[in-house]
Image (tube, rainbow, N blue to C red; front, side, top):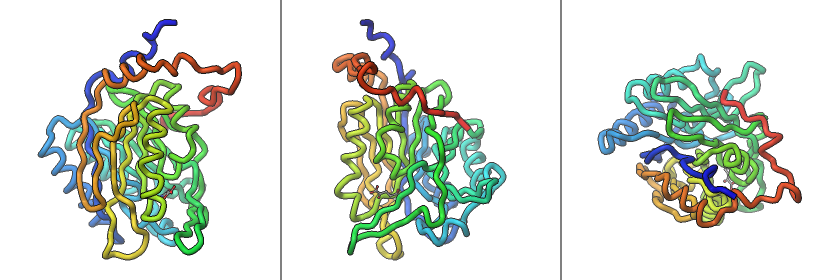
Length: 297
Ligand SMILES: NC(=O)CCC(=O)C(=O)O
C-alpha cells in the first residue's frame, strides 16, 4: 500500500500562538484583552499564521450569564471585532468561543474561525455540553442555559491545512477528532476551559490521546485562572501536542502566550513510521467520518 496519501497534510510550517488571558464580567475589557494579546503576539512573532483564543473569552463561564452575553452571528459585536482584528493584523484567528444567540432563540457555545481577510471560514457549536456532578468538588450543567450543536466541523484554513474544531468537553468524545483526521485534517483545535478539579487529572491526557489516536497536532487554548475573581476557576495550561503525543509547549495557569511552529515533516514522519492511517479495519468497525455532516459554516 502506498503512503503518499498521508503526505503533506500540512502544506508548510505553521506558526501558532495560543492566547491565555483572564476573562471577567466586563465584555469590553475582555475584547480589549484580546486586542492587547494579539498585538503582543504579533510584535514578538510578526510571521504568525494563526492566533487561538480560549473558550468563552468574552464572558464569564457561568450558566446564569451565557444569555446576558449572547450575540447573534454574524451581526453581533464580537464577530465584527474578531473579523476586524484578523483583517487588521493579517492573521488567521480561531476565535475561542462565546455565547451565540441563535435565530431559533437558543443559546449556543460557539467558535468562529476567521481568515486573514476577516471572513468567517468555520463555525462550530459545542456539540457535547459540559454536564457533570462530582459530589463535593464540582457541579456544572451547561444544558441549563445552552443548546448543543449538531455537527462536526472540519475546514480548510487558507492554503495551510485542514483543521478540525471542538470546544472543551468535546475533547472527551474521540469521534470529532477521528472525523476531522479521516477527512484530512492535520490539526485539531480545542478552545477549552477545564477547571482545577478535572484539569490536573485529564487535560493533558486528552490532548495526548487525541493526538496519538489520530496522528494530528492538537491545540488547546484555555483562559488564565482568575484566582482573585471567584467563580469558575479555569485550569490554564494551554498547550500544543504533536502527532506523536509529545507536549511541545505548555503554559502555566496565569496570563501567557505560548508559541509553537507546526512542521509538516513531523506529521508525515509520524504517519509513515506507524502507518495506522492505512491499516484501519472498516470491515470490522464503522468509519464514523462517513456519516458525519461536516460543513464549514
Ligand atoms: N468547559 C468545559 O467544557 C469543561 C470541561 C471539563 O472541565 C472536563 O473535565 O471535561
